Amino acid sequence: MSFKTMSTPWKGLFIIFFITYGIASYWMFYPYKPFVIDGDIKILNPGKKVAPGGRLIYEMKVDKRMPLPAVIHKQLINHYIVTYSSITGNVPVGKRIMRVSILIPQYASAGQYKLRWEGIYHVNPIRDISVIGSSEEFTVTGKCIDHKVKE
Image 1 (cartoon, rainbow, N blue to C red):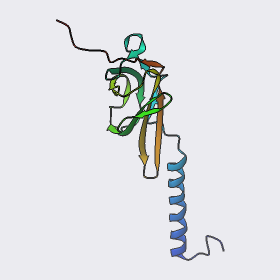
Image 2 (spheres, one colour; image 1 turned 135 degrees about the vertical axis):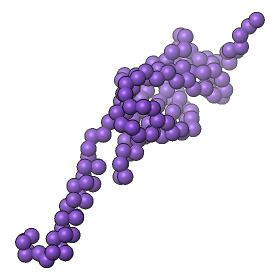
Image 3 (cartoon, one colour; image 1 turned 90 degrees about the vertical axis):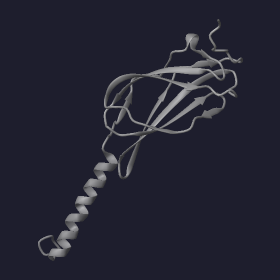
Image 4 (cartoon, rainbow, N blue to C red; image 1 turned 45 degrees about the horizontal axis):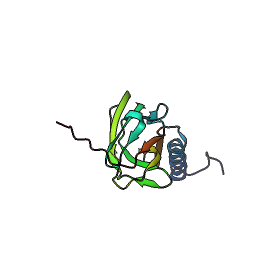
């Protein structure tokens, strides 16, 4: 059976099938890059040290290419993993340097850590893109440092 000999309703279904197949293929295989992290995440704390209960300050050089919100997951990775609550965030499209801080939990044990940052972007109805960044190593000290200003 050739396309010319098909009845009109079958021709319509045949065309709709191939259009749908083409769109789904595009959505599945197009190399989306909604957000690009340039290099490692840089730790800005003096001596790359932070105490439990203190703030870890870090910097990311990024290029946001699509105006999409992201679900952001952060983890501190050592011999165990500390996972922070997920948040939804959206920054304007363009290149920028982002400076961010997170609170190190009081229960974090002393040792060498890395920060893992992951943003999940919903780029179309059938696909999510995950962008992952990792920091240089930093040290969580064994004691809580008092950050109050002395008079």
